[in-house]
Length: 489
Image (cartoon, rainbow, N blue to C red; front, side, top):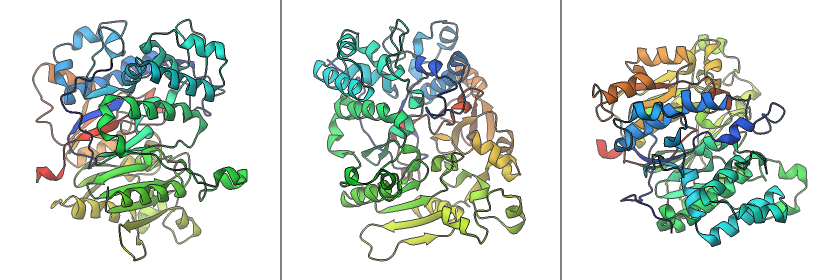
């Protein structure tokens, strides 16, 4: 039987920076080590990565930080033992040594648990084998595996004997894209790229069958496909006005009443419209702002060009912000010059029940300042920290390596990559402490610092391999529970 030991399975996210209490992640699996150069871009990676370095020297720090902030009993006093174990069993679901937290939850653990139920196992195996065009013999073979090993196979594509049955899912480490919690609802994604189709199916089964989500089955939102999509010519199916694709990196729950949806390379206007209709009909939010960004690989999702750091602090890419003439001269993209390029970036705000036309917001800074002041009630001046300290060409360089893609562990305490030097300097000038994950963990172990008392801090993760995958700490998380931010006033 599947069990869940968490005393409270509440699902609720109403801000980007309320204290994080539970999230879904996925540690880099053996499938990442199977990515070959000829398929890297098809599988949405910029390069092949060194798996052991990505795990031991980079992502494992992310997991340890999350545990220290969300579930310290699982890690306090154990760092030396964990770091000296060559098997890394602490991080691997299904092993006796696995940390097995109910607050920092690897989706592979949840997948293994639902596969213990025979009816779920049969349905999911048939679904995966169908989309991967496996033979009937392979389907029968899969049914013989232990549930947790089968979960690994479904994710990595490879068996313990090193045979590859289907392609890996290297993007599953970016858990943000499989779904997003909007107050007490979960919006499931519709991936834009076929490389992520299996991820979507695995996520559907976890959300619909795992007890952690059983109490919100009626609050799981699936985006309907265009009902005439199968009659449309292929060229029209690809149109932004007909295709229905959405990924979690384009959805931000910034306040209890306010949702942001990006229309990007990965999220279509049609999908945004469908989500808006469903959420307004269900009275989940009162206000939805659509942010249309250029369809460029450089940006991918809105969370690659801005994220929230604190109620009154945001980090963003300067070339998409409101800038003076002198700064505009430095911009490569010139989005706000008086040209047709303006059409690539627009902000429209819709209010539930309003018969008025949507309000157009001139620029990103105005929108973010309004969220901080009006939606979150911040009385402090709104501050903006720019990628690369807004210095040409470092703004674009560091945005490419996720300077704007930060995860807030609580209001004012964020995690990001160590390689974005000028962005980090900009944080220091705004009176943020910048500290490496390694040093911070040592101070936690020695009781020199405490997660509870940490404030205005940027925690840096090593990132040589992780940054090759084109996603940061925000992308690598799917928060399912945050404390209400407004309760702190």
